[in-house]
Image 1 (cartoon, rainbow, N blue to C red):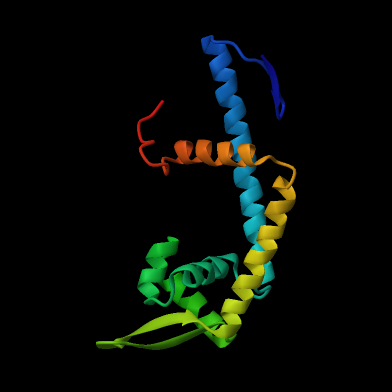
Image 2 (image 1 turned 180 degrees about the horizontal axis):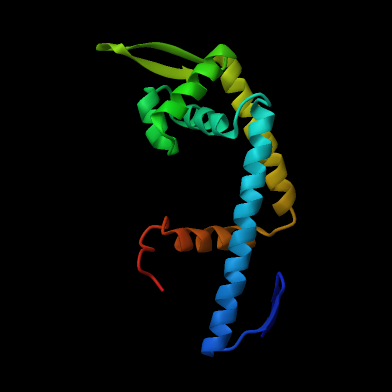
Length: 166
């Protein structure tokens, strides 16, 4: 069965070499996916606020999804060190995108959350991302979307019962 993926044109066979070629083609497509994802994240961050580093959008997106939290919880959740997170949170507060309130039960700590302006910017940015994603998949069948979702869940191990499956 011949298939073409990127620069690979393969005649898929049930041989070790055919399997290796498929795995190389898969690796190339995963690299392309990661590159496209990074580029989309950069554009999304600029859409969110052109004066902020892209990591600020990750913080804002997390707060949009999960709600107010301590800066240390945000840093851990988005995989950033606390000092970088604190710097970005301060900058976002100065731009009116975040607000902070004293943490209940611990007046030395604060809880940060999105302001109405911040929520609006995140929502608009996610809407823009959605339009771009839709443009890339609008001619796909529901079956194609479902199958890709299933396969990606298996690949990432996020599908239920997928760990260790071959």
